[in-house]
Amino acid sequence: MSTQSDHGHELVPRPEQTPDALRAALAVVDPGRLEEMQATKDDAFAKAVEWQSLSPVRSWVLAWARDIEIARRPDLSARYGHAKTNLEHEDPAVAQEALRELGAVLDEAMKAVRG
Image (cartoon, rainbow, N blue to C red):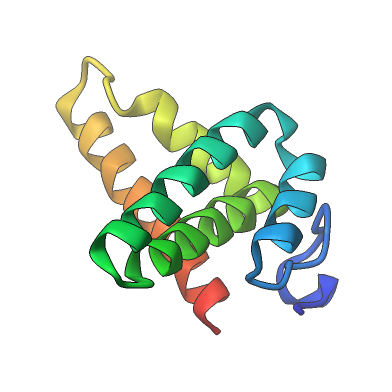
């Protein structure tokens, strides 16, 4: 778990990387995405059975841990939202910077959840 001193204010502590812990955290930071989470979980588990591999489940866990990391940290969430808003900006330089920033936010969040 991280502490608030790591990144300033955090809405919830970083959850463990288990389906139940991720779901509980998402219910607090972005409850509107709970149905999406369940649908992608069902898909990942179906692929895991079909492929006889846990890689789809691990990918699901990492993707949701990353998204929750962004949602639980107002600093990352603000950067992410601002970048998404400018992705289709009429000025190509602004759109390019938004794409770069979006990648930076996703990378920072992934790095945080991977430890």
